[in-house]
Length: 103
Image 1 (spheres, rainbow, N blue to C red):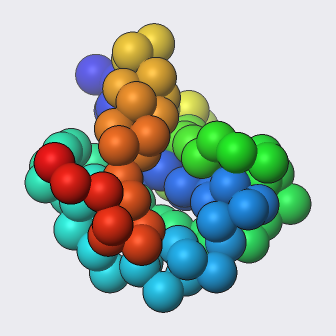
Image 2: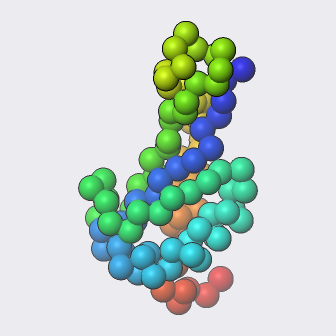
Image 3: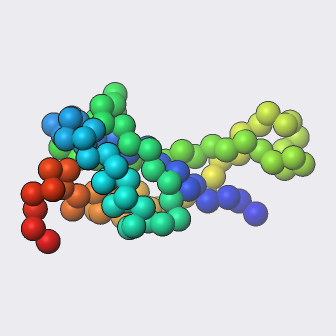
């Protein structure tokens, strides 16, 4: 049975890097509340940073379990729902790193 992707790297928009760095604990809590079955790593400054949008990068590979692959050091590609990244990006658009928006 294929494993689902369960971890993502979230790269902050270039213009929000410092604010996201300061708000990282709140952002992790926010994402954890929105997506309890996923884990997230936050990268305030990254080479893939968009100017205005958060970039969501799935961690697709995982080590093979014993007996699952012909070599113990093989990596297995996880499955990812096509809706996962757009849903995460939509949620990220509502996150206010400065905590100044009223909800």
